[in-house]
Structures are given as C-alpha cells and as structure tokens.
Image (tube, rainbow, N blue to C red; front, side):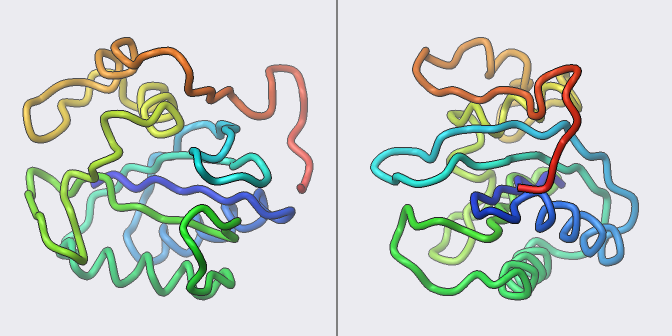
Length: 165
C-alpha cells in the first residue's frame, strides 16, 4: 500500500516524524521517501507543505487503513476545516494492492495519485518502477508526463540539514 503524508503548519517536520513512528507501529516496517516541499494546490493559499510517501505491507483492509489515517490526523490536531485550509497533518491512502473503490468515503487508487507532482516525485524516488493500479504505469513514467506548473522540490536542499519548522 502507498500513503501520502503532508503538513503545512510550523511544526510540519515534527508531525511527519511522529506520524511515521505511529504508522510503523500500526503497519510494520515502512519504506519512506525523501521529503519534498510544495506550494498548496490552488485555490488554497498558505504555507508550503512538506510531503512524503510511504510504502507498507499490511493485512489491514483499506477501510481499516483509512480509519487509522483519520485517527492519526486527529491526534495531530486536524479538525474539520474548509478545503484548502492549513493542515497539521494530511494522510491519503494512494493505493492498496490492486484494490479498486469508488465511494464517498474512499476512492482507490486515489484520484490525485497520477496528477500530483508532490506525490509522484517522492514515490519515484522511493520506487520509480513500481507498477501502479489500475494500468501498471510507473511513478517514473507518470512524473515525466506531468504538465509543467506544479512545483515540488526535495527538502531540505542537498547539503542542508533539516530544521524543525
């Protein structure tokens, strides 16, 4: 399964580090992509996001992973807010094996998976040739096919140490 993590509050780095520990405790070993920094998607405004992607293998059903994600978001302080508002933590289930879902609570694969640079760039760093549902396209190919405009850059830049934000 693949999960996208993002946060854009001052403690984003702390929140991501904490949720990685909590996810590992719940799901088992994680493969974690490098961090990326990206601007919020329009029409949202606000601070830049820190984003990463994790891959995990677990026997949890997609609905259980979604429930876990919602609990972890709440533990980080996420509350109902307008679309585009700053977020202490955002966790999206990108894919779960070859599962396909299309209902109000869960869509798999995630509809943004194939069109968001801040998801595809870290995923391509982690597993560039991973066949993604539904058609087996890889992160490397999907990333190369994105139109220009979205920015996502490795964070921190090479040679710099991350600092708590």
